Amino acid sequence: MTPVTRQEVLGLYRKIFRIAKKWQSASGQIEETVKEKEYIINEAQTLFRKNKNVTDPKLIKQCIEECEARIEIGLHYNIPYPRPIHLPPMGLAHKQGRMLRHQEKLRKISKPIYLKSHDEVS
Image (cartoon, rainbow, N blue to C red; front, side, top):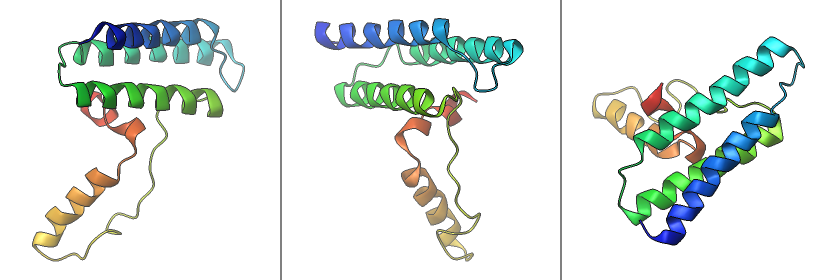
């Protein structure tokens, strides 16, 4: 990891913790605010620890883009959880043989960047 990339990653990590410190839930309830703050911190720690040994520059860039996207979406919608995608269950391919595998491949490709790591952790 280059020093510039390292500083960028550490900056994102600090930014997430600053966001968590100031976070207020949309409902305004104290219990929900505390729960969402804990989720933000736990999610950040889990994903950053999972990716700490990544050395491929392209993969590092993907992780940084995902992190930035999740931060922006969370701040915009005031929801810390990843926003789900809504596709009909069999909406991408026909229901015949090899097409089911092809549909799974299409679903994986169509997944937004901010959800790439969510399924791996959950």
